[in-house]
Length: 277
Image (cartoon, rainbow, N blue to C red):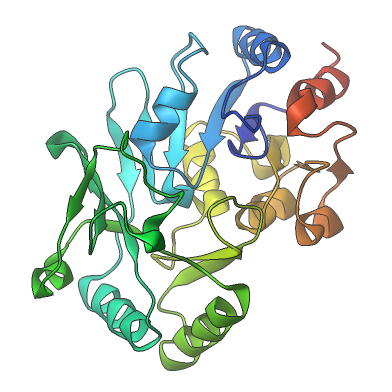
């Protein structure tokens, strides 16, 4: 019997307009009302994620920044957080500079209304399609004080896939077991995006930590996702569903590939079948 449903946002629950379809919304509300625990598991920061699901008129748990911070949408209370060690954080930034890579640093200064740190003006080409003029919860730090950030949840580098693969290899060679990282391919703002986090920061590890507190076992979890940062939860949950529009890697390891994509309410379509709704 399933008890918890973990849902990725972009490419999964959301369509290309970053909206939850009426069919997805109806089914999500039904499963919550039936007593299932629904957890949003996203690479997005908490503030943006909460805004994207505001059509779901139910209190929810949001696992943001790929598992590095968990909050309740009811009161914004932090359930747990996992920051990057300060020395490890500096090592990544310095190595990134040697590759001429420009970080977007996700942080938890929620009460100060700061979710991201960048090095330059948001309009620069290096931030194109990641930040817009409507994003006002970021701060520019262009000097060495950037290394003093102590609440970093993730370091994100958009760029060319080949370069980011090389960068990823170098990080793991120089600093083995110091980070959890992944390379995303199903994104709009660049050819690829590399993300570096706390070694215990992953969607699946945090889902397990949360579900254990609720007395829910891994085999009682359904997980939906579309990109490589979802692979671990798709592989290890009781039922892993890869979206029809998902990456080739996630489709290889999924129990089910959805018959419909995210543009056609694939989450609702599969949940109706799985839970007999």
